[in-house]
Length: 284
Ligand code: NAD
Image 1 (cartoon, helix red, strand yellow):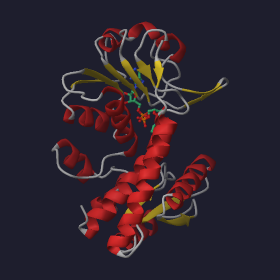
Image 2 (cartoon, protein in one colour):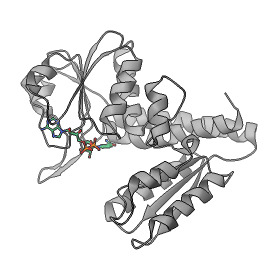
Image 3 (cartoon, helix red, strand yellow):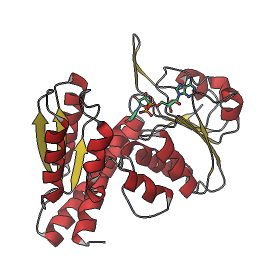
């Protein structure tokens, strides 16, 4: 039977090691790394995410600066806030919690973020850096997935990886990170023909779709490693995009939902904030 990849434990270790690095940063730089989180409106799910991010940031010994704007806020007002945070030397990372209210163009807001403070890795500058093997900031969820895969498999070179989903937030950067590890990468999506057979080639399956249990057990090659990014609220509680029970009978390892990729996302946000702070201070 499959090994269950304990993302929660891995994330806890990562957060502890980040906290140690934060202490070293404080000694070297004489200041604390700061993450600014901007929440517009009062969507309850977004409020929970922002609260959890703030708590994790403080637990790692970093400064959490929370900014709230009313749901009626205009785009110019939000961009002015982003520009103020860009210019603030105590702010190393800026995260604008998405989704934004309909009157605001998300692309325009993301584009206003200084790429060197873009800890969500969503600016086109950071997407370009990732595609060009340059130092940048990669989106947190795929970064967490690649850490789990390297921990699980060691060397990823030459493995067949199939990523299902092509979003800017998850699928595309995931494919870039796997390519950078010398995997042979296929990106499947909603228009892919014969998805089951595409997935059957994979040594590594990353599912980032948003449809509960869409990936069936018999699509997955025996001995493959499965990373399930999906978070779907159903009558049976939170489930992933992979039929976990069916896959677990024959894969080598699989992430559970919850407790797999989810906890890695916040840990990688902290990692990116520390990375941004070190680069700004010229600390290796
Ligand atoms: P998205 O809706 O932006 O993208 C979904 C992708 O799935 C699209 O690229 C689409 O082409 C593909 N897709 C849709 N239907 C398909 C089908 N029938 N067959 C094959 N591909 C299909 O979603 P996203 O932001 O990339 O998120 C994907 C999932 O991951 C969601 O469940 C989301 O909640 C979850 N998520 C989890 C975390 C985490 O921290 N664990 C972070 C981000 C997203």
